[in-house]
Length: 344
Image (cartoon, rainbow, N blue to C red):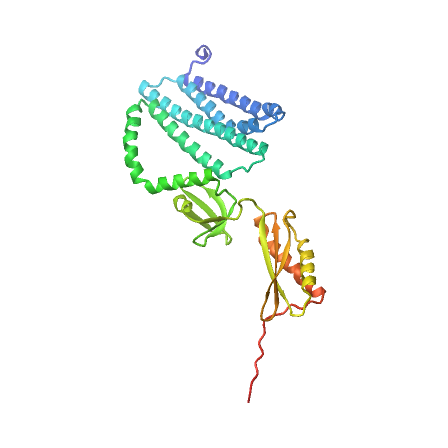
């Protein structure tokens, strides 16, 4: 139709591309300004997330379509034209795969979190991370096979060969597969999750920062990253401080001088522990007289706090309050000492 108005093929190609470009701009304006007006009224943010993440792949797909239509106006040799079309189609397949990944990922992620909220359950971030990784691998494989098919490469024999080669690959990658299945078992077993504070039997302690297909990353208290293969981690003895819940017991030992009123000491310590920030009030506070040591009467205060992240702060707060209360009450806090007598 444009040939009636524009005789030059290159000008026609430019005009087609310009028309498509303007159409893309209008579409982007519609997606960015008009559609959100309706999506904000819905009860879920799923449509907002899908709209935000899909805008870029859709734009690139439309742009590639414009390039394809523009090239169609040029008189290019059939072989070269076929190559160009193949390249454009390859990129379009990639962008479609990205678009599908974003949509499926948003559907599963938001759906899983909404379900966890409704049943008041714990959202397993590790399971979501594992799903992200698996979905990415699946989309890459599918996109690769579709691209091969688009170039006329028969994928049937390739898939059949993969069945035989898969056995050999499985033997060659035993350790890698052990790590993958180790990660899957830990995630499904809910033994660890991202954000949990763990102690391993080799002395490693820190927070789970990420669980990948092959390994788990632990951020230590010195802000160092320890990467542990999932196969090894699944066979280790793991102390998960975050389970069965975030509430954690704190033990604060302290001593007073001989002759102190034991009941008064217990009452003072109990009153001060009740003022500790982050105290988990559903658990009882216990102050016990543990030992008559060489130079002091030793006590221990037991109480729970709402989060294992606050153990250090709670210990500091409790020690400070007990020390100040004992001093204020005139109760002596002894310290080890040794008398040395020198004879001439």
